[in-house]
Length: 140
View 1 (tube, helix red, strand yellow):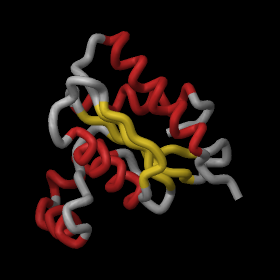
View 2 (tube, one colour):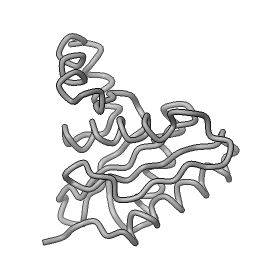
View 3 (cartoon, one colour):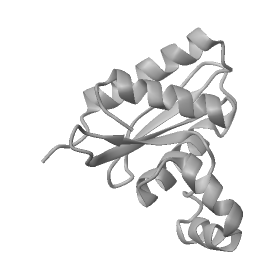
């Protein structure tokens, strides 16, 4: 059985934060969760504002829980806001359907977890997450 390793999670975060710095984004937090939604690794850059870890976790938690990137969840939430409010309530506030997290898959397409970021725009957050996953030899 393939599982996400700590080394892979740390590589994803390191690459994502490096990419963020190269792009000149604001200080970020990046969180990697395993397939069960448990934190595998997280980092918050110096200067990242309050709640960044919690927001990044909520984006990733929603993504891994629903099996799609948080961008898809944000789009779905527009058409069915009550359902997504109910999900957030049921999840005790862990579920955040906002752009900025992607699924982590192995070569066969199996979901290994998700990575979320917070600190930039949703597009910036998502881009560094996808970059980190790909740099670890995994797919989104």
